[in-house]
Image 1: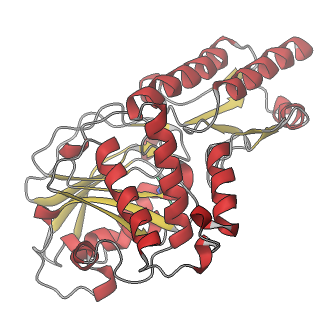
Image 2: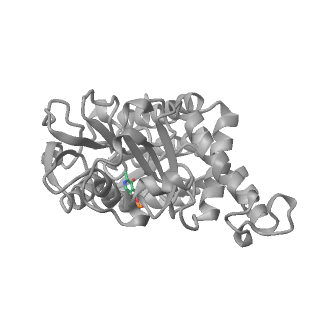
Image 3: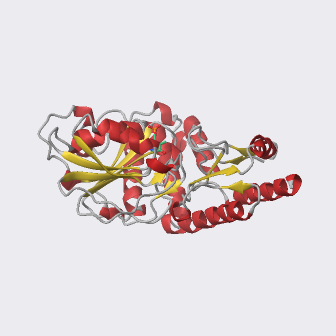
Length: 355
Ligand SMILES: *Cc1c(COP(=O)(O)O)cnc(C)c1O
């Protein structure tokens, strides 16, 4: 039995893999593979339309919002967002809460003047800043809702009159938020939604069309909206797998239900880290991520011992990111509670065996 705690690409529901595998051979009993269909055939345009409308439904988005599935990773959006929303003289504000935020900031600087409204870099990104001001003239304010590498998460979304832009790559569809408070949300698919290679972009169409500089055709969100997210050949297979995951989520009761499960999983693991003599976490308690749980052994000598012990019991992917230390257990939507129970039991057994 394997328990997949990978940070990304990461676990998806088994039924999604089975349906996706079937579609590679014989899509909807058409005798054709999903990989050999024309993307403008009704068979595929229905896939795209259902995926887009499921996103609107699951996020309770009002009619101002457009849903796009675009090529690339979240890293592409680091550039595409400011390209669509900023002119060179404009000011924009970013929250610097980790590696992905800083990468987004670097790209935004190519398009306008970036103000760092707040940063948690002083303490190795172990917390979420809570006392800061956003310059009034900022075209938008950008946050990374969940910091995949450092294991912090904005528990509530800052109130602001500025347009709010969020990178939700690693907590999209994991919890309820008022998504209508955002001007633009983007997420690479491979953490909680589908395979690598496609981005979800949710945008309030009212914020577009305000910049004066030309935007390359394929980079302009408005062109993608006009073409129903089919401006050019979309990443058809990735979009189809996203659709399967969205159907799975809807079937389960939607974001509200998965959030309950995610709270259970994260609570179970954090409680054990706090209780166990061997382990600790440096993440500020109020800011702990429910998606990526970062922790370490108090005694460095225990680190490899526990990794080996966990690996020999089917635990995959808990080795931490090189920047944030020993372990990271990613608890994305498709990870069952039973996998967290196995990990917690191993932590207890390990404690028994070394003290
Ligand atoms: C993984 C990740 C990214 C980068 O995604 P790519 O698809 O590799 O470009 C960006 N932001 C966050 C929050 C992530 O977790």
